[in-house]
Image 1 (tube, rainbow, N blue to C red):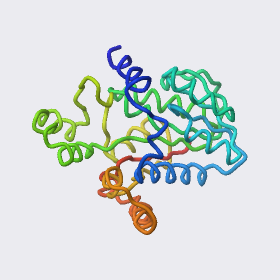
Image 2 (spheres, helix red, strand yellow):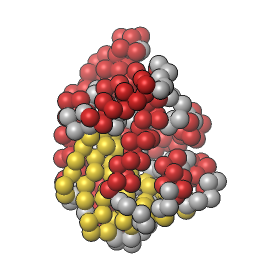
Image 3 (tube, rainbow, N blue to C red):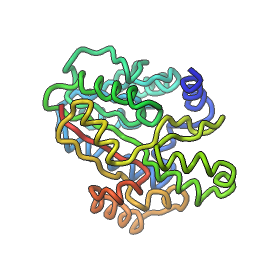
Image 4 (cartoon, rainbow, N blue to C red):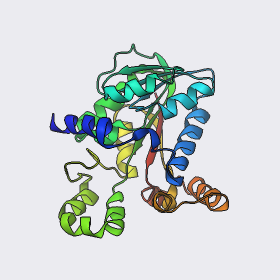
Length: 259
């Protein structure tokens, strides 16, 4: 319950999620790569469920491209913001218990919930729900944050590292993040192998896990890049997407499996 309250507090008051995918080169690359993978896996016309879709950045882009989109998020304030787009349906709901019939979508995008679910049992429940509401042969996409984000904390916020070194090392070893008031309410951080394992255990087949931003994602969060620099970073992210050791250095992991 404390973690649930922290999630609502963070996304309702402490953080502007609507700017996250546009405020930096990293966010832009995350957005563009996610959209490209989802659209390539499921051509139009198609019905897509966006679980944990927040303010609707991905849902709006997919709807504009001609997809029939339904967004679900646990945070009421984000659902209200998403509803303002007017181009898709936005509902309050929990990834672990979806109020949809079996096989009622052609594809499912889950870019958020796995970050916040602490136990493997809850993450498997969310993935199984995503698979349940997706038609046979349809694609389920799931994003995760790699454990090496702890290294980013160590290098960019040395004072934070000195204070919480033990907890950050634990995070790198088993994915359990420090629970700190006012910070990102993380539940778990993955490795690429772990994300593949969870998606496979949830019943998905042909699972492929890639890194969205490649090893340059962190730099683009702090250093403004454009033009040739951004194009080079995007080229490397795409070229090295399937290399596990490099995927784990990305800012986000992205798994795709079939029902």
